[in-house]
Each structure stands twice: as C-alpha cells, then as structure tokens.
Image 1 (cartoon, helix red, strand yellow):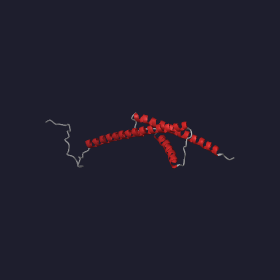
Image 2 (tube, rainbow, N blue to C red):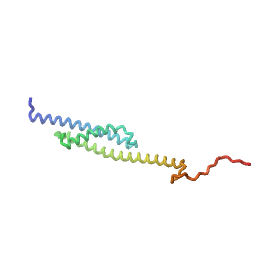
Image 3 (cartoon, rainbow, N blue to C red):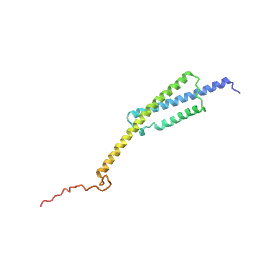
Image 4 (cartoon, rainbow, N blue to C red):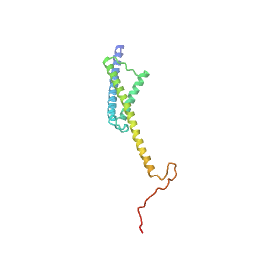
Length: 154
C-alpha cells in the first residue's frame, strides 16, 4: 500500500499538530511551575528551599532541546492550523514573561541569601574578636584588668 502525496501531507500535518499540542502542554506545565516558584520567591522563601527547581530544570531541558532541534532543522514545528499556531505563540510569550520575572526574583533571593550569610559571618567575626586574647597584629593583647572579687580587710 503506497501513500499519495496528499495522504502523506495529511499524516505529516496530524503528526505536526500532535507535536505542537505536546509542546503546548510542556510549555503550560513549565509556565505553571515557574509561576508557583515566583509566588514562593515573592513570599521571601530562599531559592535553595524551592521544591520546583528539579522539575523546572527537567522540563526546561526538554524545551531547550526541542528549540535547538528546530533551530538545527532536525525537527519541524510547521503549524498549518492558525488557531494552534496562535496558541503556541501565546504560550511562548507567557512563558517568556514568567521566566523574566523568575530571573528577577531569583537574583533578589540570591542577594538576600548573600546578605544573610554576610550578617552571620560578621557576627561570628565580632564574637571571635570579643573572646580572642590576640589583637589585630596577631600578638597577645595587653592583659586585661580582671577583678577577682575577693578583698581582704585587715
């Protein structure tokens, strides 16, 4: 059984539509994860405690691979259906907006983490200086006057 050109074109279009729908589902899932992560970052949660990171990275890798395949010409995302094409473009724009916000929020979370780390380090340095017998030169500082609290009256 041989396929006509028209049948092959229809089969290719059906496969292409299925691929586009699959990509839209991937983009929707990725967008939802990033939006959830952005909401948690907005609450002030540290980036290291976010539960979405692994899943987001996995989905982003799949998306990046698909984009790279399209750019290399190994995969075609030709969309004949205008509505499907508009849905794909709309999803890509929404994903881009969420990713832009995510980048800003992650940078802010990293800066906040760095400030917390610096505050802890400063407190540790101050504590060490307060109890250390050594001065800034590294030599033993002058003996401090210590009261023993005992006095004898004759």
